[in-house]
Image (cartoon, rainbow, N blue to C red; front, side, top):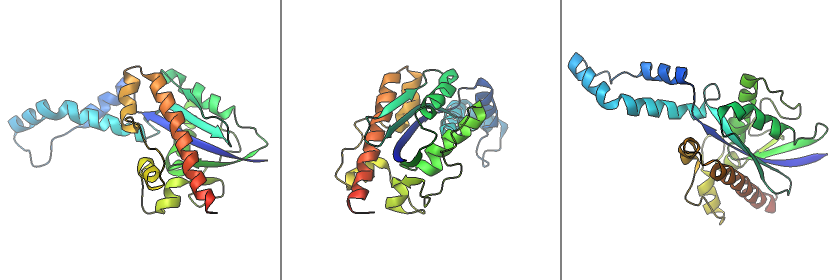
Length: 219
């Protein structure tokens, strides 16, 4: 039996003090700053911000970042979200998501940049955390595979990008409501866990609405 699985994740930067220390130690001034006193001045003024910027980028790297929320919906079901309020719960939300997939069923996975990011991040974090991956999840998804429908590449092609918000606007659908993925890390650090889970589930709903626009014209 085939089902459509709508998927979205939210990620946060590394929470490891060791990794943060390594990132901090890797920060150096621009190459045109040579004098010791100028180097010291630049480091005093910029080290904190540069370290924060480097740490933020780890939210896109499954070797270092973490999944804090997985949102999904199967067919016409109401979207659900599993959220980790601590990094120790990351494996639990992976298992919660995997447990909703019936082994004998085939799923077409729908998401925005889902093959290159969401699904890839899920697979890699499962390896890191030792969480067994269901056999009916593709291991090496490509935008043209029949196992996924990527709304971003369906619209923009493999060489271009479009944000979910801009795609919703193009299709006459409601977009973000004052909160987006760039705010997730700060919200997580502030303990706004319900806000993140609700946001992720709503993105799943938006993804399904976008997919239905494609299906309406026999894409």
